[in-house]
Structures are given as structure tokens and as C-alpha cells.
Image (cartoon, rainbow, N blue to C red; front, top):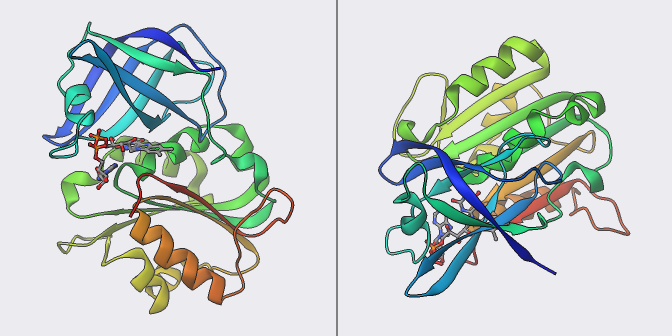
Length: 248
Ligand SMILES: Cc1cc2nc3c(=O)[nH]c(=O)nc-3n(C[C@H](O)[C@H](O)[C@H](O)COP(=O)(O)OP(=O)(O)OC[C@H]3O[C@@H](n4cnc5c(N)ncnc54)[C@H](O)[C@@H]3O)c2cc1C
């Protein structure tokens, strides 16, 4: 059964007014990279809460989440407005199946995420497992504007550490940016631009993870199905694993 731990905000990083990361001190707890917790705050004497992926590695005495404050959203703006030292509730245990556990070994692992759908990949990338099981890891982060490309220091550190085994490919839809592709992930797969830029094919030698915006997930998994790349099911291994952040 789900329980609540009281956490304390340790760090609050505002990337821009509607995008932030929160580091929360909690007693240590187990989770698998890719899982999520629910974060809760009190509003009118009621605990209101939402699911957020864990960004940090396992084994720390804090958790970090990367969050969009949705304009008109009920809970995310309340979390954005917390300050260092404030209390926040963190659900236990961590939940979810968007982990490396159900994914077969492959030559390449593609991690494709929109916006804050980057978060779970950061936790996986800091684990040894991903580097033991896949020769190359391609992280495709799709956003609207350059200000949304958070965690650039982490990208640089991963590139330094893993060299050619790690490929970071930003995709920006609303402006041209050096080193980024312009557009949306499904269109860049359809016209071949993404694979050409990265230099790796999306085929049966790959595993593909999709996280974030439901439209991106639906369009991409439809395209991948046309290439014979089906969803990973518990009893029937495939090539595609998804985590959808909201309903379309
Ligand atoms: C398993 C899981 C993990 C999640 N992890 C994260 C995470 O790590 N970071 C994160 O920012 N969100 C994440 N979400 C979404 C999060 O749980 C909330 O739905 C979101 O913060 C909006 O809550 P709200 O109460 O402010 O908005 P609500 O009042 O509940 O309104 C919901 C509406 O907000 C929009 N919306 C929801 N999430 C987003 C988003 N991320 N970006 C843009 N629009 C959105 C959708 O249109 C949705 O219908 C996750 C959701 C799930 C199911």
C-alpha cells in the first residue's frame, strides 16, 4: 500500500518560469532508475498530488524531479512555488515499469523524450547497467525552445565520460539552433533526418524508449510498428517501451 514520507526541499532550480527541478531530502529508499513517485502538497486541508519521474541515481538520501509548471494546472504550479526548507510529501514505494528491467539487450538504446520526459533517462544514464548492456546510447531530447534544454552540464559530463558510446541529440521545434535538429521526433524519423544525423538505424538491433507527450508517443510508436518494432510486453518481448505523462 502507498504511504507518504515527509521530505524537505533542499534545492530549487528554476530553468525558466515554467520549468524547474526540485531536490528533496528524504530518508533513503529503493527504486529502479525510470520509476516515479507522487509528490504531494496541502491545498485547502487536502493533500493534492501528481506523479513525477525520479532524475537522480538510486542510493542517495534525496530525490530530484524535473517538472513543467503547467499553466492552469492544479498541482504543478503549487510545487513550483515551494521554497528551500518547505515540506513536501513523497509517496512510497516508487512505482512504474519504465525501467531497463523489461528491455532486451541490443546494440543501441534510443531514449526519446519530450520536455520533462528527459527526467527518467537521467537516472538510467547514471546507472552502470545501461552501459553494461548497450554498446551505444542515443538520447533525443525534443523541446520547443532552447531554454527548455536543461541539464546541459550533465550532457557534457556524459559525453566526456562515454565518448562515442553516448550521443546526445537535441530537437527544437520552434527555433533554429546550432547542433539541434528542427522539428518533431516523428517527422524527423519519417524523413530519415534523425538517423542520418546520429549515424545509427532504428531497426531490430535497437531498443527504443519513448517518454512524455502522448502525441509524440502515439505518432512514433505507430511509425515504429510499421517497421516491425512492436511494444515490449511482459510475455512478448518487443523493441519499444513507453511512459506517457498525460492523456491525449
Ligand atoms: C508516470 C508519470 C510520470 C510523470 N512524470 C513527470 C515528470 O517527471 N515531470 C513532469 O513535469 N510531469 C510528469 N508527469 C505529469 C504530472 O504527473 C502532472 O500531470 C503534471 O505535473 C500536471 O499536473 P497539474 O496538476 O499541474 O495539471 P492538471 O490540472 O492535472 O492538468 C493536467 C493537464 O496538464 C497537461 N500536462 C500534464 N503534464 C504535462 C507536462 N509534463 N508538460 C506539459 N503539459 C502537461 C496536460 O494537458 C494535462 O491534461 C508524469 C505523469 C505520469 C503519469
